[in-house]
Image: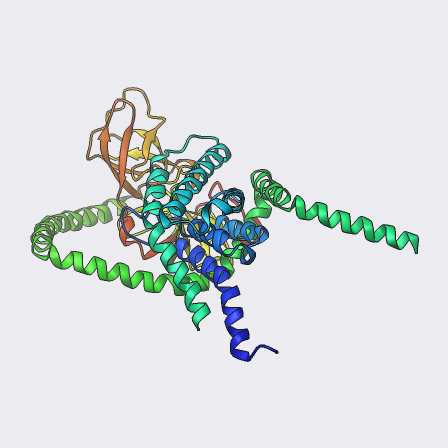
Length: 170
Length: 294
């Protein structure tokens, strides 16, 4: 039986959504938010999406795509090129290596996994950027950024999950 | 025939190897890009401006709803503080009126004095107004993207100002986009002077809200509230642009609060003062277009 047009569209939607969401979040993270605290510590939206889809939709988020997303983020954000690419690839690898322990677990366990992965990611970005600029960067905004992202992760995960279930239901 | 089988086996095993090491190869590629970016900034900058040029129209659209949310928040905030704001503005108005009379007197005096000498006025500044379409909100870099670029006359090294004061300078120019390195960025260094004492120093960003004064001459006296303006040394900025106010004087460092209100930065002015900066990234066309100083 050949799939109907609707089914094919549905499949395309499901396959596209991690890609589209990551793209949108990369653009959103570069858009000017003029909230005083967030202007130097905006939530790490692309990192959350890479963690989530790396865990639940790894086939739709191959490592080469993560590399491209990381490079795009670096190019747009003005950070040294390659930093986010390396770090997001590491996060993707961490999720893949620990998928057995995380997937199908209650949400707090996944949240804990995100806390570990994003701590490593923020520390990695801080270390690489400090090394490339050859001067120590004040880590406090990065820590704040980490905490804000950690607090927002449940909301983000819920939105990502909804996007998947609506894609399936449509 | 046997050769073809051998080649097939070889490609199959190569493919298996590539799949096994795909992740490692990708990480290596990312590191390679990082090294290239550090060693050869021109290639990376070219790619960056091309990507930003493509993304700017999209960012322009994405930033608008974000802007309306920001506006709504700002408006709610303003409504709450309407009464205090009115009182503050009345007081400021009274103060400015007295300044206006001083300015008028000085202008007349200036005119009179100029007529005594054959005064040569400086080159006329030209302005390009641009919308801020990107601000990464990163903990590591402080930069903004503008929706004006080379075709609007934006050039590397030009000063970027708001009505309050200096915001930064142009560091990358695309066709229809440009990047501003803010004065708070860790890579920003601006030759400044303390307006009251005329002491020179360098204002160095460190990614915090308040950049610090460095390379101060020994025995320099500086107090909180002193205005900091550009000194004009180094040729990047003309002298006298307002930058900030000294916020705190500590044993280790002197912090300066920039005059720019970062939370309301929607439009900025890119200013061409006709100065040959220290960043001649596009020398040939820039030099050809620029008029010689009078």
